[in-house]
Every structure is written in C-alpha cells, then in structure tokens.
Amino acid sequence: MINVNVFKALSNPTRLDILKWLKNPEEEITSVSCETVRYMMTEKGGICVQDLVKKAGLAQSTVSSYLAMMEQCELLISERHGKWTYYRRNEAGLQQLGEQIREEL
Amino acid sequence: MINVNVFKALSNPTRLDILKWLKNPEEEITSVSCETVRYMMTEKGGICVQDLVKKAGLAQSTVSSYLAMMEQCELLISERHGKWTYYRRNEAGLQQLGEQIREEL
DNA sequence: CTATTATATCGTTATATTCCGATATGTCAA
DNA sequence: TTGACATATCGGAATATAACGATATAATAG
Image (cartoon, rainbow over all chains, first blue to last red; front, side):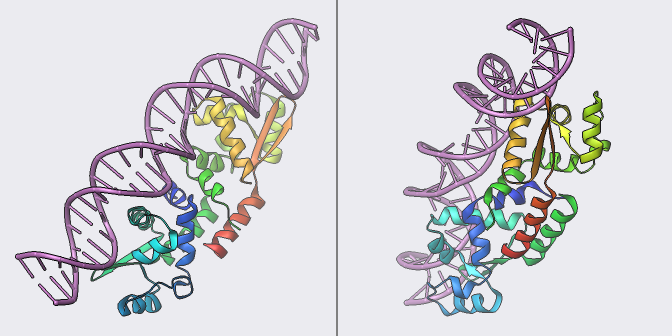
C-alpha cells in the first residue's frame, strides 16, 4: 500500500533537488576536501551531509531533518563512516514507488 | 520538468482516495439518484461532486477545492453537464507523471 | 581526557495547509 | 423571474510544515 509520506517528502523543491543531485554526485558536488568523502562518493554514490548543505544553501539542521525524512520513507539510504554520514539514493525504494504509482494510482 | 504541485496534491489521504475511487466509479459510489449522473458515471467514469462529498465525509467546499487543485496539476479532468460537474481521472496526466518519475526522479 | 569536526535533535517563529461555514455563481424548472 | 439545487469561492481558525539558531551526541585527532 502506497504511503502519503513519500509524496509529502517529494512535495518540496529542495528535497526533489537532493534526489536529483544524488544521481550524479561527482558532477554535482565540488566542495569535497577529504579523501574518505571522495571515495564514498565515487564508489557508492554517497554524499556527506555537509556537501548537501552547501549545495542546498539551507541550514545544516534543516538539511539533516530533510534527509532523515527521506530515509524514513525509503527514498534514501544512509551509512555512517567515522564522523560522516553518507546519504545515497534508495534505488529499490524508488523502483517500488514507480510500481506502486503504476498499480495503485 | 516535474512539478512539486503534483506531489502536494498527492500528499493528502483524501485526495489519494479520490483518485482510487474514480478508478471504479460504479463500484464505489452508491448514492446516485439521477439518470444523467448514472449515465456520466458508467459512460465516461465521471462522478459528480456531491457523491465524492458523501464518500469523503468532508465539507462540500473542501472537496470542491481538492478537485480543483487536482485538475490544476492534471490528475483529474472536469466536465460540466447542467448543474453537475463530473470529475474523472486524467489518465494521460497520470501516465505522464509515471514517466516523469521514472526519468527525472 | 580535551578539542574539534560532523551530524542529529530541540525549541521557536513564520508561513502554508486543512477544513469549515457562509456566501456567490451557474443552471434548470415552474 | 423566482426558487431550488449543484458547485465554486471567500474568510477564518486549527494544525502542519519550513527553516532557523542553539545545543546534544558521535567520532576522531592530539
């Protein structure tokens, strides 16, 4: 059964942008300073919160709660490595959303 | 380009229900009293506002504005016949939404 | 252990959405 | 034209969301 929360998560321009940015992390994010961060990005498509904060131009707390919300409804996956939390797209969840929309909507 | 308003429209349980109810109007709506209404329903899958008001259990003004909002972002189509406005699903718009989600999200 | 850095959570204010009742408009029948 | 009915629009009160700064937690470096 489809969940309205996924649509709430998608009904905000910044959160939609985050999903799009995470499609091609290397192209979108340029403020990478650390090797670990760069590795996570190119290897798993994961981006740390900081970089998304810079890209979005919103407060860190705002972006952090956006990401939590998007993880909750299976649009994103998070993975902590040391100090950093890397967020990447939940492709399975996105796939499932597509199917649910096709079947239920 | 995908529009956040479509997700805003979908991020409300009643509005999601309306979309689902309009999939099988004959099965869902039982309070039909008038022949014209019955004809529109079985012929074009259109349902008048009244019936959706009864089904949703919300004020007429609320449902009316929900329907307007959903028409605006191409989830529904409206057609006026006499006193009644019939709303039906905008299958082309829904199809397009599915494609946009697949391509852009 | 302490300082620093990254992220998460909390409390708050501004803004948006929800949903209502009252009222306006549009349509038909008498 | 008047009345009755269907729908749309308006104005408002309650609630939810947006987005911030301050603070808490987690992890590492020294």
